[in-house]
Image 1: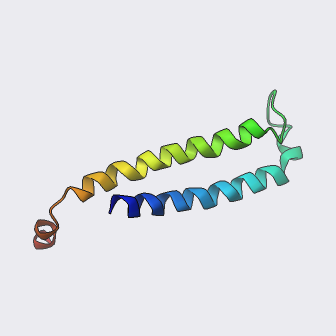
Image 2: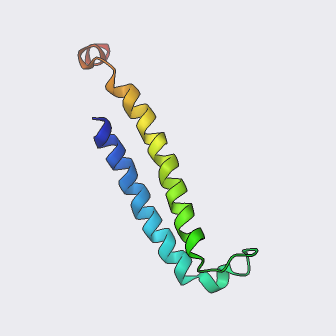
Image 3: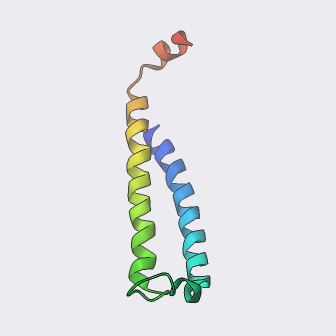
Amino acid sequence: MVALVLRGGLVLVAVGGVIGVAVAIGLGGLLEGFLFGVNGLDPLALLAAPLLLAAVAGVAAYLPARRASRVDLVRALRAE
């Protein structure tokens, strides 16, 4: 159950990361005007941001999923 919720959350992050990196690469020249000391196509920046967001999203999906998996399903259904 936890893995299912975690996988669903991380799939969304992966799709968003791929789209975001593609847009950042496509608009790299325009972004250079906004960045200080970083090239618009800097590989470290293009890898670090999606990995950090994936780590935060993983924790954000894992904690509620773990808590929900500890609930007795019969009691939860009876409360409904």
